[in-house]
Amino acid sequence: MNKPRITLLESLESNLIDYLTGHPDGHERAAIIFFRRLSRPVKNLPNSDRYISVDTIPFDEKWINSSSASHIDFDLEHLREVFRRCEEEDLVFGFVHNHPTGYAGFSDTDDCNEFNLIQAISNRNGLDSKLVALLWDGKQWHARVRNAQSPHDSIPVRHTLVVGKHIKIYGYQIEEIDDKHASARQAAAFGKPFVGMLKSLRVIVIGASGTGSPTTTLLARSSVGEIITVDNDKFDPTNINRVRGSKTRDKGRNKAEMLAEFIKDIDLPSVEIVAIDALIDKSPEAVDALASADIVFGCTDDQIGRELLLNAVYYYAQPLIDVGLGGDLDEDKDGNPYLRYHFGRVSTILPEYGECLFCQDVINETWIRTEFELRSNPNMSDEEIKAKYLQKSGENAPGVGPFTSATADYGVAGFYNLIRPYRVLPEELRNDQILIDFVYMSLSSREQKNNKECPYCGTHSLLVKKEKYRLNRPSLGKPNDNN
Image (cartoon, rainbow, N blue to C red; front, side, top):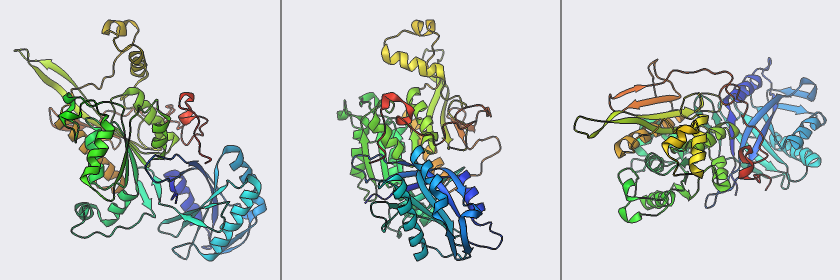
């Protein structure tokens, strides 16, 4: 069975809860929430649609016949314009209400209301219609989905994810954990619910080399339920000191497939992992896998790929943890190289919080154009690059195992902090960017730009934007979300 997942933007959730709980007499309230449905299957993983929140409309008082602390009755005729908007904008209708008495679950009255709603929607918009039902009981969200083709049946969601400065997860399956459990140490540090949250998540890691392989391995050993590793690169024995699970005889093998095989051999029964041999910006299959994920790790040194992942943060309402390394080499008096400076970087970007990779000076248009030119002409000399007013990326450093692994550790630790906040940062450090100086052994952050005009993190003009093509890039083709 397709157990869907819900993603709510924190700004919408906050407004919803304020409205639902704000009736002067403590009555039930109702609202409409519009969702964009992402139905992007991933080979060898269970089908699990994502419904991402787009907009909300509180019920107008004129729509309501009567209400109390234990019921709300309304006329469907007032919703016809809303159903029309769903059809025209390819949105899914969501019905939200609360139980002021604290009843923790859907009631028989809720069943009846949802049945009537899905029937009305399908009469207007057809039998492919869906209905998402959300209930706030005063402490947590309950959610389920109905299909017009079987309106009496409700499908419980796998979880409801609220993405803000941190991540809140509701509706996940509680794990039974004893002292012998593989996640007993995590439960001791962060609580048993933390383990259930990780198991419910689908995480994609773009890149399976110096930072990607230790990141993916740590996620698996953390018992993240579903992991997707994406890389088109082939293993070379020079990678041996930084690629987890690699052997010298693996020369020529795809890194993602090699990494997935290594993790399967760890034999963690609660972890499913799949590998995709692809370059993220060229593969519709890889972008569909990206869209299907709850959380994204960027572990690529590819500017083009990073720019695509940044777009996904906003289009798909996904947290992005992007890791990288930078530095510079010099020579000592004997002509031997030494690390003049060397740092790891962890950037944590959320749909409504954190500066984007452009504003953090991790990527820029010149570096991206240079990479496109080098793809067409990989033998282009430095002189030719300069003559075309191009420039290579500023984050270049020798990928040495201790530094790549340490940066990955910081990235996964930041992932933990998103779900179960524990960090107390000094004022000089930013939540969205931490630099680890491996030479002087210090932590720092660059100065924020606060560019209110940035289309990514300033105006948020790409936030849950409708796609004609995948990420609105014709080269990636049209998604098929109506299956």
